[in-house]
Length: 297
Length: 314
Image (cartoon, rainbow over all chains, first blue to last red; front, top):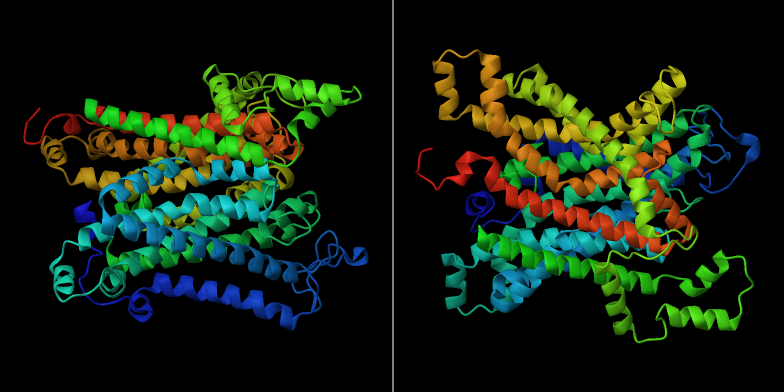
């Protein structure tokens, strides 16, 4: 554990977006593609005023045109508008879930690592117990008992995924709090809050970003998969996985119904993985901190 | 070793307790009155007496804590209750569906091994060359492509365009191919990289130099001497990721209308057949926790170097 952590332990110096992008084309590509997709998702509807939900049976399964850049689906709805709306749904839910898991996981990790002792023992038992469940089973349990919906899906994702952050942050804090600079800060009369915020926080940010980028990709995959199965977003709401489920009977008539949503998911997830990989490369962190097999890719 | 087993056993108990509590709480929070659901599944007209009698029979008139205890006792006797809709014991239904899921999983693992082993070996042998780049791109795409989309593309290409393979169903060997490919390809992407990393690590060991010095052919060194140590982490991760394998099989089963546990769970969710969902969650949870424990314990047993204390030669 110690040797694996040493790569990301730096006593000083914060994390900066520019320095982590500069030398890594992977991160740059990933970030650009992701930005482009987010831009399209938000600006697209301004350029093209087709409602993603309006059914128009006389214009079903159309080929691409100026009015419908990517054609229309089996109910005559604009594919492009639906994809853009789907991006807002999927990315929005994933961003919300990510915000929640970091807001839960990081403080727990800080508390656990900084206080140690009994609190740490109890919190880590909980983390181990939750960590034993794959997010998919949790998602089945939540959508199964509480009913299929995006909200329940998101709840289950949050419930399982915060532990990654708690674990990583705790590991870093445990190792860092013994260092001289923390001792110096304490000797200088800094409060615990100041030590955590000013001195420990810079060490935590980068690993959290690596984990977050990886997690967002995973979350998007699970949201799309469960929506495809029918347990997440419900039709007619435009979500990429749900769109694939919705249009499946019409794929033979118009394969683009199948191509675009899948391609969208793939592009977003690849971008997230590239960003994560790029930041990790720069940190030269072995995969071990981030759990099984993460570093092998 | 005994210490580890003791610690892990304690952990296992905590996890199982958590699992049971979660299932129970979610079951209680679930919308709809189970008593009415059960009664409505039968064709009789529901009277108040019937309702009260069933409520009493099921123990729903007792405090929640008592209900939880009773429910736990039932679980310990492997009694998972009865399906609301089919009236069949849940355990029986699960056992009936299990073989299909196992068959699919085996198919997926077979495809995974068939692709990951050659690809991982080649990319380790030709590190930084064309096969390595190819496998890297394959791994990145494999980790990013949603499994169900891959399945849809495979169906479109092989079942619709080329009409080589059947679109769905289970029975013949040809119907196994597409689901196995769908499940196996994503895993192959991940494991080929793991195998490559393992091979590269073991190729730098002294015993590989020794083997080469003895004049053993390079392919033998690679496929026998290095492979043995390299497979270990792969098998470990494979055991650890049984959860994602189950997840993949749920999606694959839905795609291909494969009559396994996954389709059972999904249709139970739509039909609000809570006992079936509960059975699925408990069983898969138990499976995942159990396999992880086994993997943990067997880790030291598989590699002779881990078994021996450091510094001691075997």
